[in-house]
Image (cartoon, rainbow, N blue to C red; front, side, top):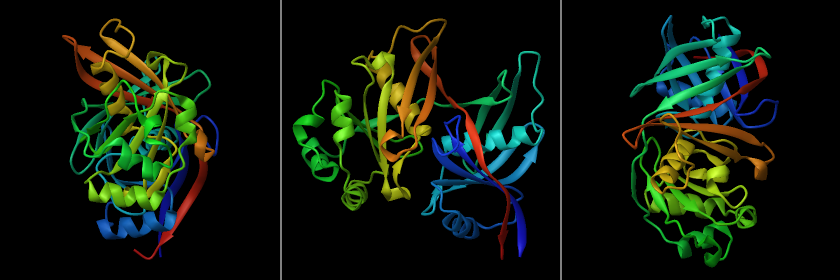
Length: 305
């Protein structure tokens, strides 16, 4: 048996059992992809981050759900950076800020870490702008799998699909009450996603009648291994870009626009996500997805690999 340093974090939450659970498994450089997938299935949380290499300026990782490998995972990155901070990885400047880069098999991403007065850190993962294509399904098809009348899915914003990291259908809903009324048929959602070449279905509504003041959201992900996500990092990057393009965010100041996002209430794991959009010449240059994580498990994972 091989012993691996291991932890579990509640990401996008400042308390245990909130946000989205992420496993962190260190010293995983010798594991194969199939072995990582089997370990992720055993751990059973929405995403497990396998650390395959660490240098003073860069951390190499792979992300797996219990079903498949992820190209990127925002909530697991928040947990990872908190794991590294607890092990003294970061050297903070006079403003309490540190930087590193996150290397996956396909991307290299900048990460900023801000130390708070209470000793915790807030992580800001810098991602490129999202890209969009027309929605491959309509409200009637969605209503059948979401358990809600198609009329309640109507909005003055159009559905669209992002193709960045995941193929996620973005579904605007005008009222929070309708968002909460959704009763998902997870098998139906999985079948619809697979038949329409989608990964997830992401519903969002304004918190208090104005999208600029923040959104409530739900994301259904059975096709990639999680029935309903308690906190979505990369998909919330896409919704931030979409709302900016639709002129639904407040006017940018000093080249920055921001969005507050709440998720996870319906699954009993409330989460808070911060999105910061950096602009150049009126266009989205990058999107920072930020939040905190709370450790809930710290120990070792024993594997035959």
